Structure formats: C-alpha cells, structure tokens
Amino acid sequence: MNILNNLAKSTALAAIIFWSIIIAVEDINLTAFPFIVISLIPICICCTVMILGTIYPVFWITSNKKITNQKVFKLYFPYYAILLFFICLYGIILSCYEVLVVSFFISTYITSCQSWIWFSKEKKA
Amino acid sequence: MKHTTLIITSILFGILFYNKSIGLNLAIFSLITTLFLVIHNFQKFTNNKIRLLTIVYLTTAVFVFIHNSSLSIIINLITLFTLVGTVAEDKTSIYIAWINGLYSSIAGTFHRNFEKTTEDKESSKINKTETLQRIKLFIIPALFITLFILLYKDGNPMFNDIISKIKFDFVDFPWILFCVLGYFFFSNIIKPFRVEPATSKDISLKNTLQNSDKYSEEILKKEKQLGATLLGFLNVLIIFYIVTDILFLLSNTIKTAPELSNQVHSGINTLIVSIIIAILVILYFFRGDLNFYSNNKPLKKLTYIWIVLNIILIILVATKNQNYISTFGLTYKRIGVHIYILLTFIGLITTLIKVAKIKNLLFLFRYNTKIAFIILLFLSTFNWDSIITKYNISTAKTFDLNYLIKLSKRNALTLYQYKTHLNLTSIEKNRIDQKHQDYIKKIENSSWQELSYESFKIKNEYSK
Image (tube, rainbow over all chains, first blue to last red; front, side):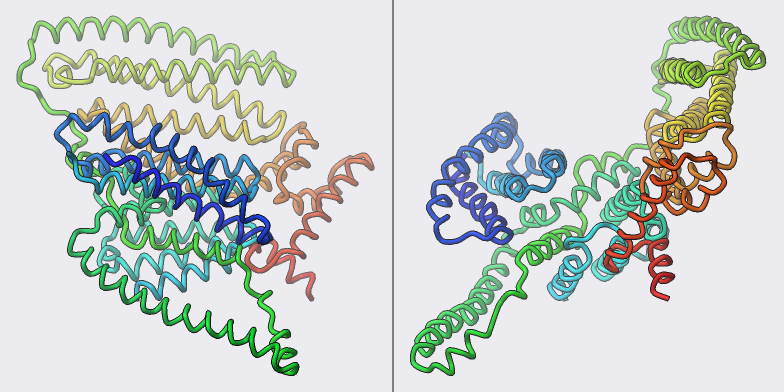
C-alpha cells in the first residue's frame, strides 16, 4: 500500500479544508501566511496519527485474507464513518462551536473518509 | 436537473439555518428534503411503506413547529434517517433502516465516489474538461479585468471614484460555507445507499424459529424439567413478593417525599432486574428445539404465568409512581419512569408472543425497536413542559415551584397565566414575570425562521 502518497494527499486536503473554513469565518490578513505554511507540520502529524492509527490497520489486518480493498471498504467503512461522525460532532458541540475546533473536526472527518477511498482504490500487490 | 436541485436546496439550507435557532426552519427543511427525495427517487415513492413514512416525517415536522421541543427535534431527525434508509431499502428492520439512513446522510458522497466504475471515470474525465473550461472562462477574464481596473484607476480620477464605491460586504463567507454544508447533505441523500452485508443479511433472516430435526428427546426432557422447576420456584417467589407489596401499598404508611421516592426507585430497580432475568430465562429455554418438543406444555404454561406475574409487578410499580406523582407533582424523571414501565410491559407482551408463536430473538429486536420508536413518536406530539406545569398547579397536592421555573421557556406562558391561582412570595412572582418577559423578548427578536406556533401567535398579538 502506498502510505506516503496517501499521507501527502491527506495532508494537502486537510490543510485546504482547515484553512478555507478559518479564512472564510475569521478576518485573516497576509501576515498569517507563514503560519499557514508552518501549520502543515502539525496537520501532517495529525493525518499520520489518524491514518496509521485508525485506517491503515484495517487494510493491513485484512491484507492476508483473500478479500479486495473494495470489499474491505464496503465491510468496514460505513461503521467507521458513522462512529467518526459522532466523535467529531461531539467534539464540535463540546467546544461550543469554536471556529478552530469546528474546522479541525470537519477536516478530520472529510480527510479520513477520503483517505479510505484512496486506500480502497489501490490494487493489492 | 441534479445540479440545479442541489444548488437550490443548498441555498435554501443556508437561508433557513445560518445563524438561526430551530423553529419553522426545520419544518420547511423537512418539506424541502421530502420533495428532494421524491424528485430523485420518484419510483421508490410508489411504495406504501415509504409513503406512510413520508407522512410521519412531515407530521413530526409539524410538531417541531408546534412544540419546538428537544424531543420533537430529535424524533424529526430520527424519522429523517428512517425515511432515507427506507428509500435505500424498504424491506429491512427499522434499525438497519437507521444505519442505512445515517450512513447515506453523512457519507453518501464518499460512497458514490468509491463506487464510480471505469465507465464513469471516462465520462467524468469529459465532465472535468468541461468544468475546467468553464473555470477558465471565469477566472482568466476575472484576473485580467482586475488588473486593468487597477491600471485605469490611476489614469482616471472619476473612474477611480466609481470603482471605489463598489463594495463586496454583501458576500458572507460563513453563509456560503453553510450552503456548502447543505450541498454536502443533499448530495449525500440524493441516492441513498445500503450498508452491506448487514442489509442483505437482515432481509434474508426470518422471524420464526426452525426445527433442527437432530434433537434428542432425552436432553429436551431434562431441559424441560430444569425449566419447569426453576420457573415454578420463581413464580412462587414473585407471588410472595407481589402479595407483600400489595399489603404494603394498602397500608399506605409512607408520608414523606424521600420515602416515597426511595420506594419507587427501589421498585424500579427490582423491576429492571426481574424483567431482564425473566426475559433471559425465557429466551434461554425457548432458544431452539424445546419450542417443538411435544411435551413442553407445562413449561409454556409456567412461562405464561411468570410473564403475567411480572406484568402485575409492573402495574404495582406504576401505581406507586402514580401515587408519587399525584402527591408531589409531575417531573420529567417521573414521566420517564412511566414510559419505562410501558416499554417493559410491551417487552413482556412481545416475549409472550415469541413463546406462543415460536418466534426467534430477531423478532423481539425488530418489534421492540419499532414499538419503542412509535412510542417516542407519539410522545413527541405533546408539550411536556406545559403539561407538567398545568398538572402540578391544578392537580398535585404539593409541588416544587423552583422546578417549574427552571423548566424550558416553553412553560413561561402557562406559568404566567396560572400564577394568580397560587400563593406566591414577591420573589417567586418576580421570577415568573422575568421568565415571561425574557420569553416575549426572545420571540420579538426572533426571525421568521426561528418561529414556533406559539411564538407566531404571540408575535401576531403584539403586532396588532
């Protein structure tokens, strides 16, 4: 499985979603640009933890069984998406809709779901 | 067509919900969602089950507008998931419909993206080129226009004045983000999905038990003896408990609220443990071939007696709870106890049907979930805050005024109307007046999206 490729794409996607929401809601000027660039490091760490900790193990455990990645997606993704959705929703409600937290959880949810699709569309070696 | 409806509904979503609390907007949203589902799944709406669910969903929307309570909002959302799930597959149990509905509503777009075949990929490539061309047509002229405006501004002061007057303050980016959220939701439910293999497995599983043909008469005879002995002793014990409980109820020695509260709660605890054990025992003995054993009639009779005795236990706890309510007033917890008692009663009746008609465990899950959902639906049609307030003031012997004042604003009017019937201190009167004033102020400041039936009437009265 091409983990590095998935991580790179996920980091880019997460960063775009995270900053798009913040820029749309808060007044941010050009001086914030260096922070946006630096933020790629924590975003990449979050994506790595999320993907290697929750998505990759599912594909790795099932890699020895004779089931395709598409089948793995159909079997486990619905429950993963439902669970993650409620965790993110709970986090958003707990933060009293703080923009930074809302942005974090929305990007987490979308990136994780998209990451599942990228993994599932890869062919097994 | 698909994109047009998606864009229209997402804009409406933004108009209805952005920076607004729940009220009329959720009712209108339910109507829009129904229309959207009908447009994109017209064939499915010829099914009577889906039609009935649509009517139920729209009815819950009406009750959101009338009562605007948390329960009515939650029920409206659950019914939405049920409807979406039933559109995905109409022959499943209600809990599978919930999973299908929830999954389609939150991750339908991702699933669609995953299911795209190679043919779709080719057509999407063509679409992508067209979209790219459209973007080019918009972005390149926009860039050049901006550049030339900046150049001409320096060259002509009059042109500069006119251009400076153009503001883009009307563009509200958070609102646009909200519309994107609406777009995401509606594109998720456009063609609801089935969660597999849960859906197909659920469809294939029947409610009745099958005879295995391999059972030994000897083992079944021993199992029947064990069951009959166990249920026999349990029946004797429960009869003894019920008799003492009735004597205790008739003696009516409890006078204080904590004593009665303690009685009701310990009664409920007994009931919970008793019913759980009762159902587990029944499910264990009637899990398989004992249902088809020719000599199982004594065990079945003992089971029916055990269920009936548990129902009597339920009635006793309900009586205690009702005594508690009539003496110390209604509260949400006390209503909750009554609801729990009702659900337990239904659980026992379905267990009785399971034994009598040789049904399996799935039958219990399917019917109990469905009945619990219907009961919650029914309960969401009442304004409980107002009912609690009216009952406590007019019927209960004593009640906690502080509790009534602390309830949501939906009882503000009732409390204000009834305050003349009560012997209140000036502080208590002020608190009721303050609650009423806050409620009226909130209604006056609310937009049309946030209105409920009551606030709509009040707003009309004040505008006259």
